[in-house]
Length: 483
Ligand SMILES: *Cc1c(COP(=O)(O)O)cnc(C)c1O
Image (cartoon, rainbow, N blue to C red; front, side, top):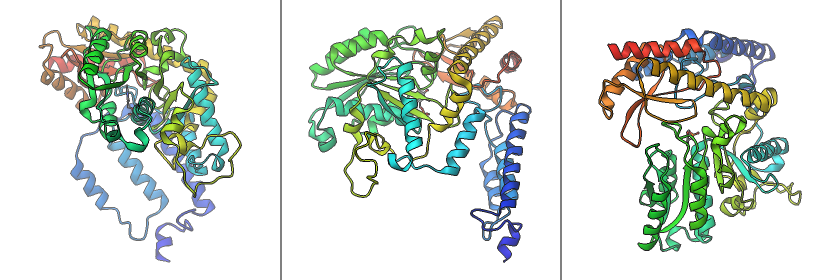
């Protein structure tokens, strides 16, 4: 039994022996604790060297298996050395959070119990926890709770895709049967240059095509220009196109811009368009009474995208699609098949696979449920306030040091440019960002806003980011600018 020798007598390689499992759990907990307590001493970002990684992987002999201890160590060493550390307090990145402890517990329990979230009857507890969370968040967004519906998704991209499909089915009831060719017209959807590109992807994979994505100009504040929207819709109708959907973003990815949702909702209503609000990150603002007003009008949306794996700090991926139309997901996704379990027929439940692009899937909602259960809504309100305060502090520190703010956002994403550089010169910005990132002191990124401004982008993503971390980032930026 050479193979079990190499595994260190750990028993059956799939379950492992009870002693081996105890050792594995201890090692696992120890490694996670070591990571969280030591991550701030690591470089935030790795040196990128794909060849070295592939060489390292090739040293691993997988013919007869290695010990669990060696396997875990191999992976932890790799993750520690070769990852942008989202748990690092100076990761100021693209909304990826430091994962809350209860979220990690949730994902571990999900892996161990492995509930199947396709048919309700296979996992009633899991299905009802998710349905409960959808109702809670729908209410928070101002939807009538007894009317709202929704589904957990892999993330914001799938939720946006779901929104595009729901809007298509709503506007063109024959779409499911006949596809777009049955329409004989080009459907058009309205976004801005600040909108997330997953919407364009949804347009291409749903058959609308990128030509059906109409990019509405933005105002000086980088918000969707509603006058321009109305004019575009009218002109498009006159030329034979069929407008069906407008997307407002509540917290754009580059600059944290909140579109004027109330005004967009007015246009949508007048023109008979579905209003989808992409609140993947910024939607969290509704959880604090101090910021909920920023999202006024979101309660008029037909559907909303929200990601728990961003501001709410649960591990990836955990998106939500929420809608005020209780029948639309059925109309969009319900299938007839002969093999799925039927044990819950007549119980007044929803089979998740009938409301989702996905079929078999994991219990995505548990990491949110457990984190919420321990933090409470009060805890989340405090987290939102804390992030906003840190964002304001960072903005102020950078302004004091002569950087120019490039985005007017009340949310904790700060875009700045160098007053000595040309406003549109991305090369200059990229050089500064590159110097900061390769120093390992902080992770930030660059972006080009829809007014052409090339900027440095820093977002508060970590609940452990302190004022000292903000100053360290500012120091790193000053050093990079001088160099
Ligand atoms: C992050 C983000 C998305 C995409 O969400 P994923 O979870 O990465 O799939 C969509 N829209 C906005 C505004 C985002 O910030």
